[in-house]
Length: 101
Image (spheres, rainbow, N blue to C red):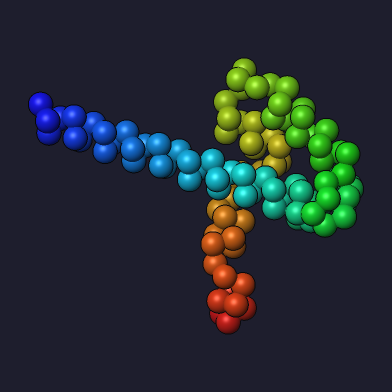
């Protein structure tokens, strides 16, 4: 019985950690593509300052559908493409190390 509880706790902990990392990857990708200057010029705003159209797009793509649409589908609609790990990896790699390559 103890072994079963031990495995159950560790499996649940792993699942929670994997979910948190997936959420962080999505957050980095959204921020980098829409709010940190990686957006198309039509979205407006200076680098780091989202324009009104970026906020409107976020509201319509993410906030309005809420739980009626799958999260991955909302993310694709907001980004206009498949999610990517690039922004997350860029945040993890120090700038000096990236410049050395």
